[in-house]
Length: 418
Ligand SMILES: [Zn+2]
Image (cartoon, rainbow, N blue to C red; front, side, top):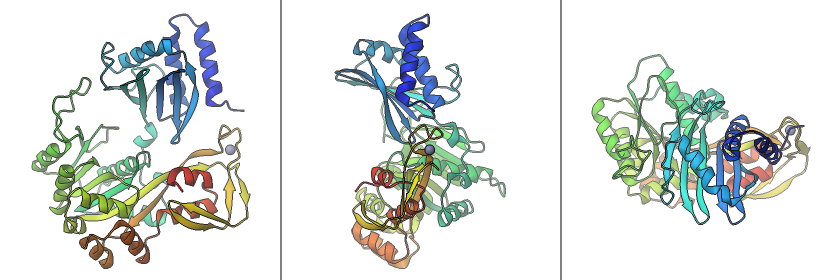
């Protein structure tokens, strides 16, 4: 039987106390190696009144490992900050830095370590750049048919904006990277590909990758960020002079970047980017709020894909053939059958293994939808119209996944809300 994360933590604590050398130093090494072995994406060291809580994020869900005495808080922060070359004596400002792969024994992934001052001490978050994402192709992302086809077709496009929308942790960056990788490897013709990222997560052959700060007009760089001096919008305008055919912009966060990106898409470049938003229709509204003209959206966006990641049920799940009325993301829906998570040794008792992507695509080439965008229609109206014009909304795709036993009802509610 596999151990839970809390049981692992107990073991690491016991072993660290027995080993020679400083307890915290030994323990931190074990926590980092353990997180890598359990495929955690993040580790949190959060000081509170009761001590420093240690948590792992696995498949998008936080798991509490346990608590360390608060008196170790400073030492924990210092140890982790040293790895990333951060200033240990500066405890009142946020800092961020990277740890290259191989820097710490037994950890092949690259890490980003950030610190922030909180009421009870410095909160440290370690983020792993997953090696899985490094090799993800469009094919291996796991999207279903119309979406997979659409993503493949993107590679043959010459212009327009391809936008991947979703909240953080929805896998949108992974999808954008997979498209970029396919563009770089498609082989039919060599294309000039430039990507602007904050931060660069993985090196991709055939792509000129530039690390930028996504804060518009960033002034002096903080320590540990010295290479990120140019803001995204300025670098984007500058790179237009370097004859790119394909541009990837890590994430559009503000007006000037959005303007420069859509301008590029309108002038014969293929632009791939991500945008924070709850639904495809909502993101159109958010672009309008940023001050982007509706005709620019209408003529530059090739397609807009909104996605989420749901934990995949392990094969130990149990089927219930019973109809159920549910509420998801504000919609009343009917589920004809569903599967419940159980837990076995394979899934470590969680009932889930890995994640599956679910998406909706806003058909912007549709005349009715184009007109609604030009008329600045409200999100709700646009959403309803898209549905009438054939868009299968995200929630309905999620219901299909529930009925097929790919994911569970509680998981759908966790990700989409009631
Ligand atoms: Zn299982």
